[in-house]
Amino acid sequence: MNETRVSSVRPRRSFIFSPGLRPDMFPKALACGTDIVCVELEDGIAPRDKAAARESGLGLFAEPQADDGVERIVRINCLRTEFGLLDVQAVIASATPPPALMLPKVMTPDEVVWLDDLLTERGHDTRLHIIIETNQGLEAAYEIAHASPRIDALFFGGVDMAAELRCKNAWEPLLYARSRVAHAAASVGIDAIDVPYLDLEDLDGMAREASLARDLGFSGKGSIHPKQIPILNGVFTPDEAAVAHARRILAAFADADTGLVVVDGKLIEKPVLREMSRIIAIAERVAA
Image (cartoon, rainbow, N blue to C red; front, side, top):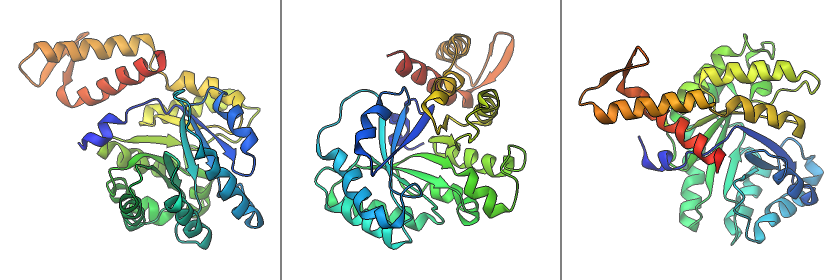
């Protein structure tokens, strides 16, 4: 396990986009209760507005950011496009880069390695979040997840993925693709974040899908409106019973000299320790 990944454990239960063209909306997004605010330079910005969005979106980070527990990310354009290259040039040129970048439509690990090398050469500590939303990206998801220690999360781009797979954008048809993303993220100890639920009037349906994603191994889910965020945060916050159970397991292994213990009448093996530690870390960060 890469230690950089272990140290990055934090709540990523929900995220919301804030348009790069509207820097005035950024403070409201930060205050809405989400764990992640992503400044949008990609799909939500028309081609004619890309340059303006890039300038105003990256300009948000010219001033020091508050230590408020909200993770700030900028979603740039695909690295294989002119707009994406211009975004990267602007980030590299900046003396105050955003703390993290979200990379859409990643197809190969080489894309991530290339950007990592550029950021390293410039001396930027910028973290990376990768969207898996193409057939090529899905096939290479495991290798992509391992491509850089800067990566903190894989995001599942379900809308584009459904179009790529020629399937319905629904839970069952996308279960295979989601499972591949969860597997890739878990293999290196990073978070997997699920696609936003698009029906604003079906909060119960969103809660069900979020619960299914959680049980599959996802750490959080996107939102398209602030009213979705409290529900998502609730679904992905470990409850008191889960935290107490995790503490009992950690205590049992601390007292044992074997790779097997019995907790609450069930046989527990040592590989679960990583997940139990993550549950406790998330609960403690949320409480703080």
